[in-house]
Amino acid sequence: MPPRKKSKFEQWFSFSRHQRRFGAGQVYAQFDGVDLDALKQQIIEGDETRYTHGSAKDLQQHIEQLKDEFVGQPALNHYHASLIVLIRREVDTADNYAKFKALWLAERDFLLSSLNTRWLVSACDTFIDLDDDSVLKAILMNAVVLINTLKLQETERFLCDHQMQENADHRAHLQQQRYTLFDGTSAFVVGTDDTLRNMRWRLNDVCGAHILGQIVLEIFDRLQQKPNENVYLRFKERHTREKTRWW
Image (cartoon, rainbow, N blue to C red; front, side):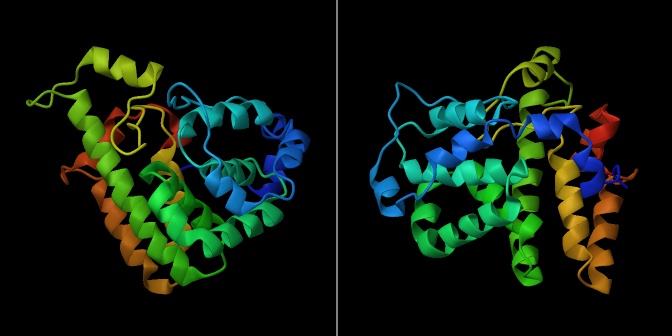
């Protein structure tokens, strides 16, 4: 089993979590009373698209840096991403999730045609974390597992040669900077990434809704065990950070 997820009470005592909410007032002022139709028409200006690698601790700074990821796209896409950031950093979570869900119910088709895969998966993660509908959560979990499996497979393709020998320079590259895979998605950071741990926590939550959900968890556990050679087991053997293990 992965490390236990901290309780809300334990999280409250984490200074870094409080630090990552600094600047929330400025963000709220920026998005107060937004006009969705206007945001759909407004295009974010800039010279080139730049993806963040990690995130600034200051919330306002991170929101501003995130704009570079949406150069040439409707401002509504940046607003959608900003709501996700606020939710991740636990800023008025209930209120911002209500805005997030209302946005999807009102603008589903626009968001589907406008957002790249990276942000569609982030949207799925957000619904899984916070929605009360267990059917919706179970449906969206399919997208998360599918993309994360492809992320591992494509990362390994970058990392290794045709004889499955690791390229040390490529491994160092993954630690030092973002490596783009496709449609906004990025490679798995070998050894430290928390993507699979977070997916496992969500899988536990979704499967816990029914007694037979244990079947899925058993299958996932078997993927991490020898001699069941597969991409999950190989990345387990490459992983070094105890805090972010997923098995």
